[in-house]
Amino acid sequence: MSQAIQKLKKERNAVILAHLYQRPEIQDIADFVGDSLQLSQQAAQTEADVIVFCGVHFMAESAAILSPQKIVLLPEEDAGCPMADMVTATDLQRRKAEMGDVQVVAYVNTSAAVKAESDICCTSSNAVKVVSSLPQDKKILFIPDRNLGDWISRKTGREMVMWDGYCNTHDRLTVEDVERAKSKYPEALFLAHPECRPEVVELADFVASTTGLIKYAVQSKASSFIIGTEEGILHQLRKEAPDKNFYLASPQLICPNMKLTSLEKVLWSLEELEPRITVEPKVREKALSSLEQMLALA
Image 1: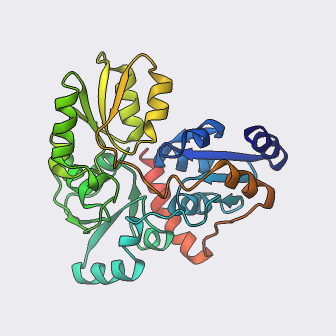
Image 2 (image 1 turned 30 degrees about the vertical axis):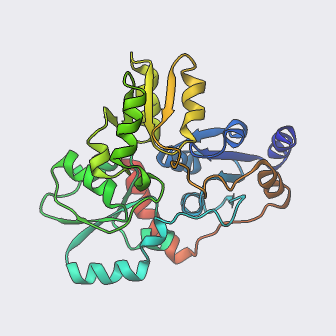
C-alpha cells in the first residue's frame, strides 16, 4: 500500500505532510514530518499541485489559506480538534467588543473563521517570539489554550487574558502521572509540551514544542527521557536517537483524532482527490494576514 501511495503521489504531483502525532506508518510515507509551524511553512512553500495533509482539520485549512491555488486533501475529514472547537468566530467577536482595544493572538489550533477575527497567529514553536513582538501598551487576548497562554505569560512577563480552552490530550497529564513516571525512571529527564497544565510544566526539565523536544533529546548528553506530549512523537525520537530510552509520561497521551488517518485513507484520498478542504475567499483573505505574520516571526 505504501508503494501504491508513492506511485500515485508522483502521478498527482502531490506532497504528503504529516504531523508528528500521526501513526508511525503515516509518518514513514510522508515527504515531510513536523509540528504545526513547520507544516505551515511547507504548505506555503511547496511547488506540488496537491497537498495531502495527514493531520487534523485546522491544519488542512491553514494549508488552503496559504496555498489557495493548490488542491488540499484531508484523508480523514472527521479528524477535528476539540480545542479548536472551544472558540468560535461569534464568541470571539463578542469578547473583542467587551474588551475594546485588544490584540488577539490565536494559537494556530483554531478554525479559519477564528483566524480571520485575530490579529496574529502563533504555534508553540514561536509563541514567545510572537507575543514579545507586540506593543507593550496593548492588551492581549490569547486564544484558545489557557495552558499554553500561561507558559507564554511566564516566559515573556506579559499579562494576557486567557480564553478558557485546552488540549484534551495534554490536559489529561497530571502531577501524579509525572511523579509516578519519575519514581519508575529516576534517571530520566522529564520533557513537557507547554499545552500541559502549569503545575505539570513546573516539574519539567525542559519545555518546548514537539520539534523542540526532539531536538533537545537528540542533542542532550542524557540517555533517558520521560515524554510529556502525544505518543506519536516517540516514533521520530526513536528513529533519531535509537541509542536512547524514551518513556511516555502517561498511557493517556494519545490524540484519537490524530490517529484517524490510515494508509487506506491516504491512498483513497489520492485516488479520488477527496475530501478537499477549501476556505471561503472572504474568510481566507482575513485569515491569511494573521498566518503570514506568524510565519514572518518563525
